[in-house]
Amino acid sequence: MKPNWFYILLALAPAPRYGTAIQDDARRLSDGAVRLWPATLYGSLEELVRIEWIEALAEAERPDGGSGRERFYRITPAGRASLETECARLEAMARTARARLSVEVSRA
Image 1: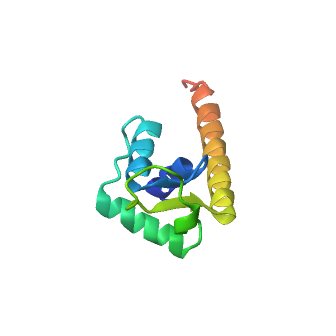
Image 2: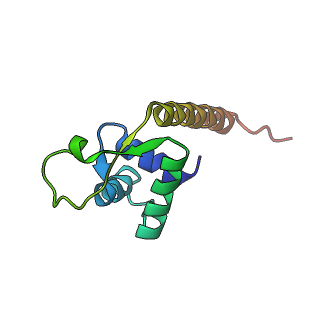
């Protein structure tokens, strides 16, 4: 999974959000390592909608507040399943790396 997709899905996991809120949350969740510039963010949102991992909320489903121009997105069940699969993959990689790092190198 692309890192920007991971952080977008992670930002949407607890609740629907709009573009700027997704950008801000991704930056916060990654300790500043992921900066979703507008072209990257909106291109990624379009791709995630196309593959049905997220969906845009209908006007009647939008949360209260905001200027009314924002487009809100939410994670779909398929997106949540993909995020969970990616989390499990990353956890397995980290376990393997930790195990490998804890092995003492024998000096011959």
